[in-house]
Length: 113
Length: 114
Image (cartoon, rainbow over all chains, first blue to last red; front, side):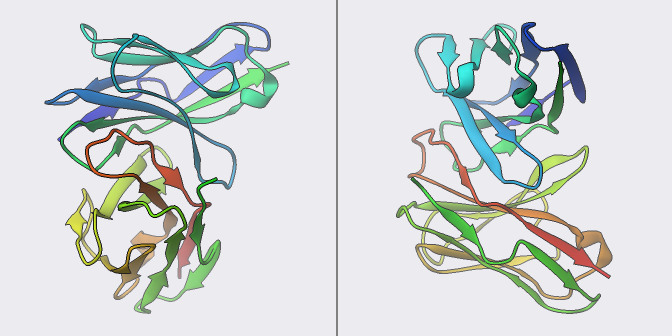
């Protein structure tokens, strides 16, 4: 079955600095990769996805992610972090044949003023 | 906008009680999912369904069952609640199988079993 790993439980950055939240994946077929964000006591919100095509994917709120097939990675990035970006971020993977989606353990991003 | 509605945001139940968590989506999505979320473990898939009356086990189906009698509704049932089922439960839906569609989530149901 497909799986994802988020190697960092916590990422801290200063406001205005670039941020990266890391994700690696394992899948037998072609990967469909996703990032979601969760604010306190809320459900998950979709940020962006990679299905096919350009390796750099742009999403909501100025976030982008880069698909790297050789490194099986899909890191989330933003050029300039905002305090309001502080939240829990989840990477997820689905292979092209199945319906089920698997999530990583999550990374808590804290952006300090 | 897609709306996924979970019937209860907070529930407190006693050990051994039967618990129903209801989820309704309004976008005619084929697929529906139940996850539980625990700190440090992320989201773990309990069950999913890709059609009415169809269900598939996820990674942690033990102690749970599901029902999908109508396309828009997917219920999670805890036949006899236990304290280790205290968790946040998240329902989600998505478009047809194999299209790489993102999931749309409800706001979650936080269950405490005493």
